[in-house]
Amino acid sequence: MPTALITGASAGLGVEFARQLARRRADLVLVARSADALESVAAELRSEYGIAVEVLVADLAEVADVDRVADRLRDASDPVNLLINNAGFGLPLQFADNDIDDEVRHLRVHVEASMRLMHAALGSMRGRGGRIINVASVAGFISRSTYSACKSWLIGFSRWANVEYASDKVSVTAVCPGFTHTSFHERMGLAPGHEGVPAFMWLDARDVVREGLRDAARGRAVSIPSLRYKAIVAIASLVPSALTAGVARRGRV
Image 1 (cartoon, helix red, strand yellow):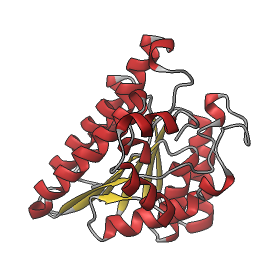
Image 2: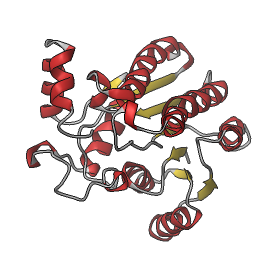
Image 3: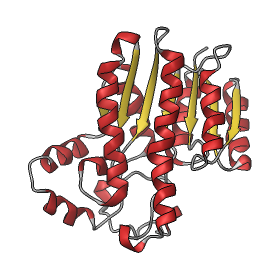
């Protein structure tokens, strides 16, 4: 059976990736900070689908924890076929108003940890084949604080790596959802209905994951779930960044 390693697997899109892959009978390695939450998800998936589920408790802002996850990706005796870099979080304020240590932690989780894990995965996957999915955001196409900058890095790197490592049978896909119904915004202190986002802009996590997995299987470098967000990204590329930045302040992607 193929094995997928998913970071940020205790909630949100991470759990949905785990469920959809479990339905396909993939074995899983689930990574997150909360041991209780991970064990709960793992028990559910083992019971319902009869798959092997391994749990790795790790804080991806800590290099030592990232190294443990990277070691798992390098384990040739039980190889990982699919890496999903999904761990991440948002910050509640604008850059100058956030604590700089929080901003550095944010950068480490979104960029440094993803980079380290991709490096480890590529060392194992090149030649035998594999897939990497980086969960980015449509925010990566818009100028908006460090969250957008981090997601833009994931998109740019994925585009390059998908071409660079195609000859090694490895695909790299940046999945770029818009506003999606998960616990992401609640963890930022925004109660449901108070995010400042119109109802029609919200996506269902099941659809986001289904489209992301489909596009990754097709070898696409960038996946933008839903026609409405494809249109938004296309329009955003044509207008001045000052305008898109102003619009983006109304909500958090």
